[in-house]
Length: 141
Image (tube, rainbow, N blue to C red; front, side, top):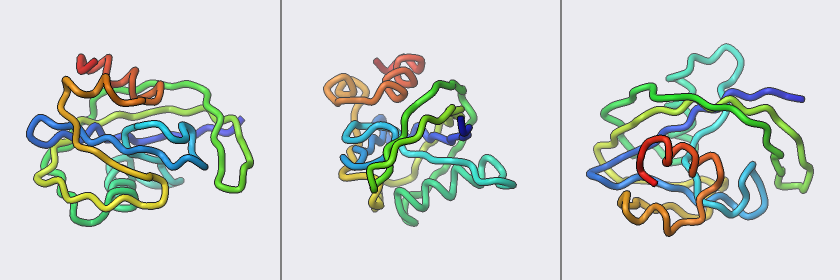
């Protein structure tokens, strides 16, 4: 089984948290709302990976003012690729508290939508299991 280290930013701006709705045809949690993030490449430093993933998935204009390592977790997931293939992967999640200076997001093809959500509205979203676990641990659910 392949192992992946995943960096996940919990991005907050003025009391709202950024959620991204995964594309229906790919990823570990197709069609559900999630935190952004992705895999650390071989030889890549963790914060560099986090910043790269944010740029790739959320665009160049989102500006982070604070990045603080917060917690980690792990589990085994089945990833579905755009061509329909599936793979079981051992996932190690490194989660960061992040504060953004703005809400200027441009999502890539991994997502079909995004939303800045007040904490009290988070339970109304179809959150994937890993995001629900993270937000519960943070005291937001």
